[in-house]
Amino acid sequence: MYKPFFGLKENPFNANPDPRYLFYTKAINEALSGLMYGVESRKGFITLTGEVGTGKTTLLNRLLDALRQKRTKTAFVFNSRMNSRQLFDFVLAEFDIQCEIRTKSLQLMKLNQWLLERYESGETAVLIIDEAQNLSIPVLEEIRLLTNLETSSEKLLQIVLSGQPELDIKLKRPELRQLRQRVMLRCKTQPLTETDTRDYIAERLRTAGANCEPIFSPESIVKIHSFSAGIPRVVNLLCEHSLINAYVEHQRPISSTIVEEIAHEFELVEAQALPLQAHEPMGNDVSQERARQATRE
Image 1: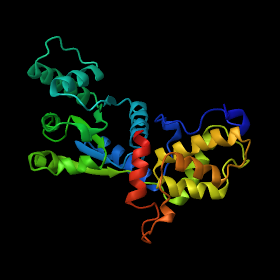
Image 2 (image 1 turned 180 degrees about the vertical axis):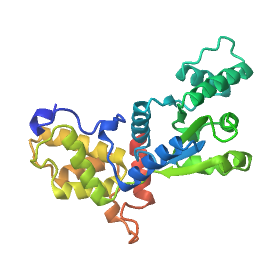
Image 3 (image 1 turned 135 degrees about the horizontal axis):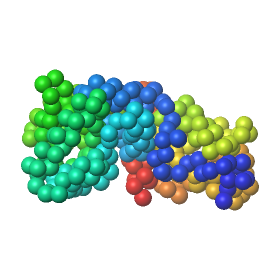
Image 4 (image 1 turned 90 degrees about the vertical axis):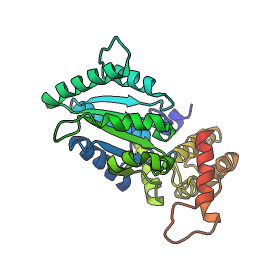
């Protein structure tokens, strides 16, 4: 609708985790480098945690793209609300391992044989589980046992658990101490700083085909960062609706007033209107909680 008006070829702020739109902040670069290093070094268990909407799934898609270019065998579990049997069925299907008899012992034997063949061929196999904070304790224990598939010197299966901060909390439970001790690398995503937010918006617009003419005013970008608390998903929400409203009003560049109208519609709290500590440029817990609510609606 608004694309011709702003000179765009596609919607720049879609919610889809398109790896083409991954914006490489320092935290994202460190997380991606850590994930690649952990997989290639066969560390076994790696975790990726971050607040809702900070780009974990987009980062995982970028990781998957990079791994597939290296001909790495990957299994991506996106629905973490499953039992142990469903998990094994899904993993074998993702790795294209045929197993007609669905007993866990035989499935493990098939998986172990397949992993040994990949290892002898110099290939790496990676299991990535998104929204891992939703995994039950029994399923997490089954996943831990998968790391027992190993040679005398290296793990045969590399496992990435990605989730919200609740994943870190769950892993601290006493019954999961064996799993927690096996986590060799912990990667994290972070909210955007104000500078990151400005560059993030500019990069997404550029990827969507924008020319050099400004679409958002500097004041509107400050407001976007303030209301979003630096959460990329909420930045996308504010920008998308601001583009729609500005198109209706034939306004370019987009003013801070339009951003404020959108923010009030979604009941977001402006971080700058609240007391801040000097070392917390991305907002406080109240604004971040409002941002979380907006991402879930």
